[in-house]
Length: 305
Image (cartoon, rainbow, N blue to C red; front, side, top):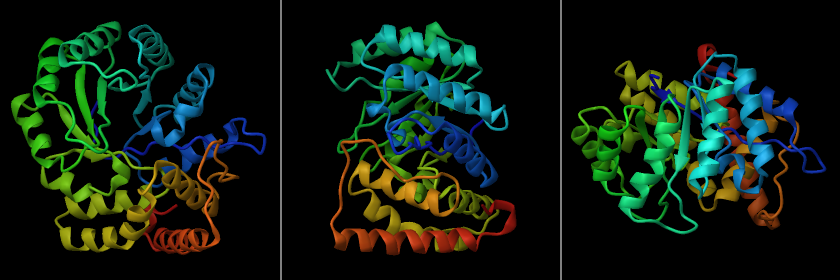
């Protein structure tokens, strides 16, 4: 699986009764692909997967794989604190036709390196499709580079790492170098560290879906030697990202609001519990959303919504 560019993590749209809106989910998939997504991922943190039942997670995976119809590669987030449940979901994702799985390191009861090698080794050996490790240590330095290298040596299908750590650039370089290029690195954290990733050899980013078109345009400009113009576009959406990344629930709220304004989903509802903002914050959100919707409208037709 060759990933280069923007691989958005889909939101999970909901009806008024908080049930999953599958029609809007399909529309969101079409929106992202039309906007230039190089792949799609669900159901992950940005999908509110922590509020979904196991049956709902499996159903979201089914909808995403089937509706995408091999137009772009699909990563299914199958991670859980249990090897058994992670393996079961990973095998199901493979049976659906997913192109790979993403698995977050267990955090409910944190484990040592030896235990993590056992955990991810079991997952990798249970399937044939590529495996991505999500290093979601949002406030820390993340897992040691040696872990990724050891897994790559033991498991040929361990091929990707998603970094969501503080100042991940040097670790990105070391992962690529020490693995001999076997492990490719993508950045998460909403896309705000895009140019850190590009400077340190990352092959892509995994932001929310709303700004897929802008990020895809930035990659096109950067790869075409127009780094200055790419940064100009990035600076246009940076205020949105900085504010949204104050809290995961805020990021999902703002992503959904942009998607709704663009006609990709019907409602910006989140499942409870979620943040409820006061009037001043709501006004700030509205201004930031309006700015990025305007930016999306100005994209060249090749990556427009």
